[in-house]
Length: 467
Image 1: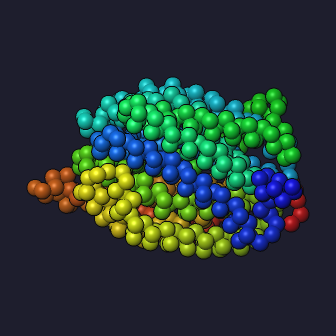
Image 2 (image 1 turned 45 degrees about the horizontal axis):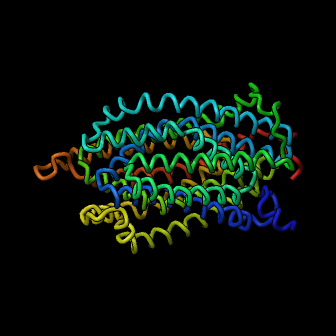
C-alpha cells in the first residue's frame, strides 16, 4: 500500500539517482503530453474529415490569438510551479500552503478577466490579421466559445503545473486521459452527429477541460499530508502575489512575445491562402508529437531543479541536467525519425487533399534537425526557471522570435516573390523557424554555462535544510 501511495503522491526528487528521478517523473508526463497532443489532434481530424479544409484552417488560424490571451495563465503557472517546488523541497509547509492558495485565487480572477476580454477582442483582432473571408466566421465562433469556457482550462493547466511541482506527475496524467476520452466522444457527437461544425469542437473542448480542472482542484485540496488549503491560505497576500509576479511575469512575457510573433507570422501565412493555412494547421498537430519530449523534459527539469535548489543541492542539479540533456536529445531524435518515416499517413488523417499532405511533409523535412536543438533549449531553460531565473529564457525568446524569426520569414517571402508565387515561398515560414530554434539552443547553452541562475533561489540558505 505504501508503494502505491508513493507512486500516486508527491515525489521527492532531492534523493536517489538523478536519472531515475527524471525518468520516473517524466514517463507519466510524456504520456500526458501525448494525451494532450491527441486531445488537440482529434479536434483537427474530426473538423478536417467531417467539415473540410476551410474548417481545419479556421481552427489553425485562431491558435495564435488564443495563445496571446492565455499569457496570464502561463505566467501564473510558471511562477506557481517554481514556488511550490522550492517550498516543497525546503519543507516549508506554511509557505507552500499560502503559495498554493494565492495561486488558486488569482487563477479564478484571471480566468474571469480573459472570459470577458477574449470575446470582445476576437473579431477586431481576426480582422486585423486579414483572416480569409471563407474561414473568418468559423474562426471567430470557435474562439468566442473557447474564451467563454476558459476558467476550466486555466485551472487544469495551472493546478496540474503545481501538482508537478510537488513531484506528482501521475494524477494530472489520469485527469488528462479522462478529459481526452471525454473530448473525443463529444467531438464525434457534436460534429459528426449533431453537425455543429467548428462550434461543436469548441464546446467539446471547454466541457472536457472543465471536468479536468475540477478533478485537479479536488486532488490538490486533498493533499493534506504536504499542505493545508483553507480560507486563510486562499487569501492573497502581498508577498506571495509579488513573488508569483516576479517569477511568472518573465515567462508570461516570453509567451506573450512568442504569441505576438506567431500572430505576425500568422498574418504572413494568411497571405498564402487557405491551403497553406490548412497545411500549417496539420503540421502544427504533427509537430506537437515531435515537441512532446522537449516540453516533457523541460517541465521535469523545472521541478527537479526547483526541489534540489530549495534543498540546497546545487551539485545534484548540475548532475541531473546532464542526464536531462541526454534523455531529451535521445527521445527527440527517435521521435523525429519516426515522424519523418510515417508522417505522410499521419497527415492524411486530417485531410483528403494530397497537395496539403505533400506540402506538410516538405515542411517537416525542413524542420527535422531543429527538434534536437529545441530539446537542449527546453531542458536548460527548465533548469534556469526551476532555479528562479525566468528572465534569461524570456530574453532568449525575445531575440529568437522577434529579432530572428519574424524578419527572416518576411525577408525570404519578399525575396522569393514571383508571378507563380506573388506572396513569396511558404518555405519562409519554416526556414525562419528552424534558424530561430538553433540560435535559441546556442544562446540557452551559453547562459546556462555562464549565467547567474545558481544564485536566483527564492529559498534562502538558512531556510533550506542541510544537504
